[in-house]
Image (cartoon, rainbow, N blue to C red; front, top):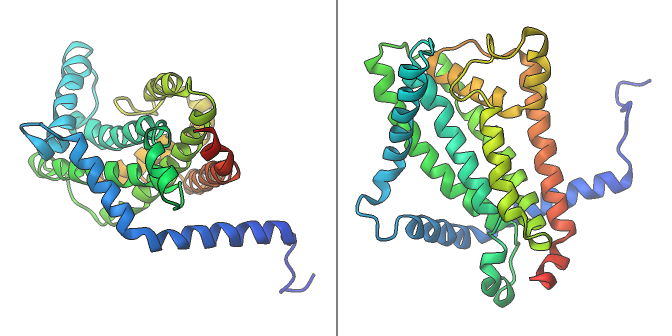
Length: 280
């Protein structure tokens, strides 16, 4: 086999599908003004008539952290080093994921008038919610920095790894949001099923507990492969708390899983886009 020959060449349909996805994603840049307007609308609606307004982006994870510290730190005596920071580094990304997914479910059905009036890529609606909740997540991460200094944790070069888990989380969340937002058009029960699934996933993700010592050692590998959020949170903690970086094979598998989830969600959304618009 020559050096230039690919062992598994892509067929013409696969190449066409990849080019179509690239073209569609690049076309979203033309709608930057619309995306910014929808993000601004989402943020304003979320904090409309709120006395503290955007301060809730910082207060919400802090108050949730205090509740968890009371329950797991005081009542259940969980012995995790620097538990408040450990909790926040899992809780802030999780709140982003949970809010983005639960709001994405109805993002198509709640924008019927706009969809019927103007043509633009409908995948912008789940993307808008990912961006607006992502902004909240970035503000929430600011809360961690003073705590890191208060607890005397070292800020190491690993902090430059932080964009990696952020990117993986955004990609994974957008893919899941695309899938459920489309599915909800045809099966409105998703409005009730998805919050339940998100709540179930909360307890299956290491937000307030450690993987080692909680998950039996022989199942840790399977657990990390099956739940990419576990690897993503480990990368957050490696970046901000100088925890060990997960094994590279799990990072690669997590990356592949996030890309796959995004592609499945995106292709499912685009394949059913016309039927979806007619259905609403």
